[in-house]
Length: 502
Image 1 (cartoon, rainbow, N blue to C red):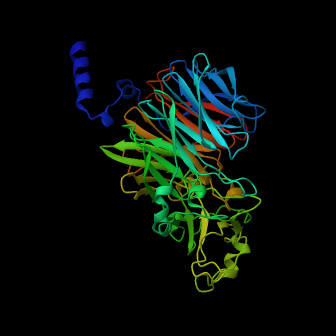
Image 2: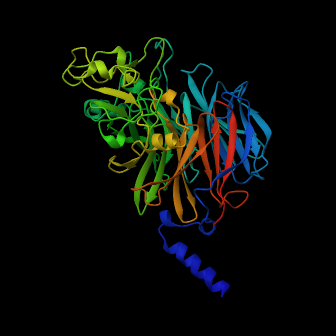
Image 3: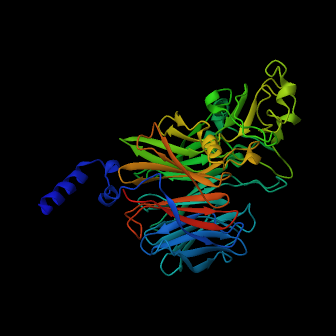
């Protein structure tokens, strides 16, 4: 009877399409999504000491970015997830400046390392996860901010942000580097093919701005996710309020999708815009918008339909030579569009709200006809084929944090709970999204089994300013049970969470 059952299970697996195959171990591990608990915590050294982590299932080692006293990657043994310890540190000093991101595939650790001169070419360095020996060092674009492997392990991709110098005299191109693992050859591509579409892109919310307004230099790739078939990469262009689609095999940019704006005149999107009203109060405001400007992005194929999940953090350009932000109280408002301007500009309303000065003066007369703040205080789901927004969490993350008394009112004038990271995992027969909230010091779990209709499950406290959220599925976990790993950049804590089995 056991043999017959096994054969039937195997036949069932292979009768499914590739994107629908269910890991039999995952399917046996029904776990309570609302009962995750912290089981371990380790301090890697305070501010800047814990940003991004990657897990190697072959060694049960966690690799953590650490840019505190010395730029390095800490290796953490999590073979017993309740008793974790640092067993090694890999120095980044021979390679340049900060290490910004790590990724693991099949015994290889890829690290994205910026140059000591931030505007010079960076590196992706590949190490052996068992011996820590360098396998290969590859030059990539300026300021590689995120690195990932394709799902088949044949490619390594880095998002090279290319930020300008503080005086804006040196502004390298934003780019994406595609490394072929078989021979470690690299192709670094920019976005110049779309310069002729700037007007059409800008009409839908795309931004090119700053001194010089150079198309290639002003595009700043932030984060990458890869399709299940490893043929397509999707890259967030955070400051530009867009997502780019890249053909990995040919190394070409296929399209750029502008993300548009979030309308804060709608009650479902109401925001708490003041950090000086001594309360948390959500209100809607006409002619006030949020730019989605996502940081992290995750891919999810559901019944053959590709979806993209984004954490809509927002980010501003603030340099000695150029700062785009001002508070509403410091700008002139159009009298027709803002008939109650005097009241709106008070601290109790939106006077404290930070907005960009690069948008809003639509008629060029020196006053603002609309106001655009950074980020959307939410996560979104987008149709990867059309670029259409399928779902947005509206103001739910802010409100849930307020309900739990973990909402940071001091950030109301900026980006609220500030969703920064997002990752997708499978727990039993459920697919979940885990959203890291940098300013609430928390992560939220959503049931996205039906990706067009995510359902909030629960919010959990973390360390100070969670930067990275990592999901380890039961099939790869040292305890055959799913784990969530959160690394926080302000206090240097790496925390591990597990839930109870049902």
